[in-house]
Image 1 (cartoon, rainbow, N blue to C red):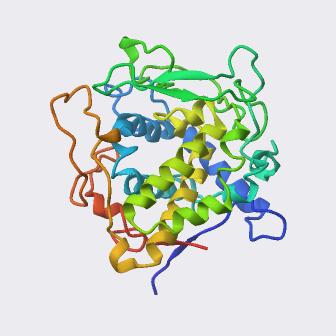
Image 2 (image 1 turned 120 degrees about the horizontal axis):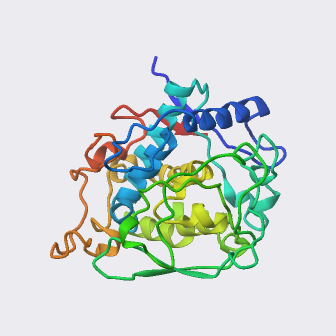
Length: 339
């Protein structure tokens, strides 16, 4: 009998299926456990990498301009989530599976969710309010042939360190990367930079956006092109922007442990879309090989081209599977479903 992992709803509303406190605590414990284990990434690549969580952040930084606004967004992150789930289970004794947060249930008041209530079974709450550092910002995305490509970030309601929850003492080491001024000597934030976990909640990125209506529009997308565009426009960016600070840096949102439950929700939306026509949709792909098809600064003369399922993806630590490996949930070594 095949053992199929069932990813479970995390922190649902009252009366909804939910993980109990014991299961939540086990998950949060395992994340902190990974933060206590030494990094495996070569120090020559990321001198600032200290722990296993940094391994995930390093490769996400390294691949950001390839795996966002491109054909690799969904399959790369699906494999990335699987790698995290495997690390939690195999290295830190986590007994469950990677949970997801159905943020649509709380779109009009996300802080009403137990995810952010500041208890030991939560992910902590907002960062302390910093009058001079809560935005708005215009941050530069390094690594593209277009110099000073900027991305606007809205003003939030925090900006500083979180002071509660199980990650209040978490030390971040890599990044930030997308900033108002880029240091050429540390363009991608690989050098040591120990600091706290900060957040800058922006309710405007959730209210009227991360709701049932848009989730329904995403899973009802008629084509893979429409699906990818709807996920990017309606869900992906806004999920990160709501959290703000570390969680809103396109390169290193993985510094905030909430990254994984947010991306599991995105993966779930893709899974629902695929499940409506597995034969035609499992391996459907759309998009360029780089961010909006913009050439990378180290390959300025390479013209835009479309991603294929035979393309190789870099997942870090020498793992470079073909894109098609990250597309089905029940083949190629992965085996999970969403409830």
